[in-house]
Image (cartoon, rainbow, N blue to C red; front, side):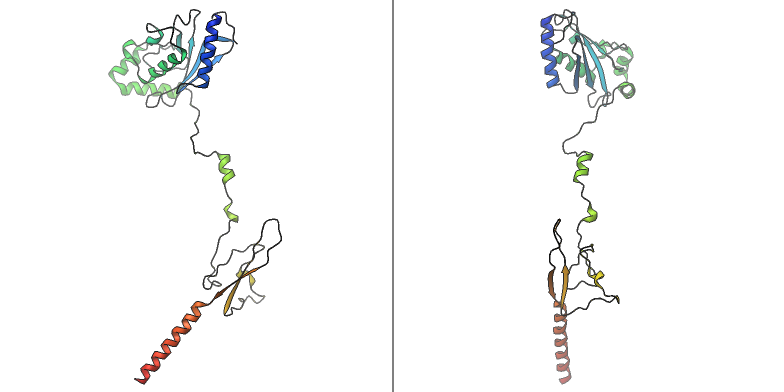
Length: 271
């Protein structure tokens, strides 16, 4: 546990509990850091709230605790340059919570949340930065332009957040399937008959196009067309060929149609 001559032991114990709670359940957009050897200075990184000129920026600040803490309020300073009515050019923060509205029962969590809310709703009536306060009252667009400019130049860039359902590159690589070796059925018009499907050529399963003789002629087609498919299982010997036969239904149908036509011709001759 930290030992600090500027803070009483009971205050150090209280701060240790509160800082542990802030670390385990941090407020939205706030990350607290502390030097274990000195609890009198509390550091925090505050994310610029969405929809404000401070969006997409992270601002570092510190709270300085006096020996009278928590009876007297801490003093707050922005270490990151920011264009804001209630934050002086030297970083001093002007907010009622750290002045006349302070209460010893208020903890660090409450103070940090109030400071972040100040980025959402400034109070130009009690401005420490007179230029920012005047612009906010007279011309908000010009004020927002200045604030965004300061944010882009001085603020820390936020770390990317990974959303649920988004795959990392390593995950995508692990799930990527090499499609070059995926089995694809190809119908060859030279060899396809009545629904016969030919597998693509592989070293162990040649297509019918590669089964030509030395003369380059197609293998003879009989009344029953035969397609040989060779299945190979990983790590085992080649399986015996499976013979699949298909009747030439189209040829039979054509012969039947021809007989009908010949019969009609004979009938017409008789007439």
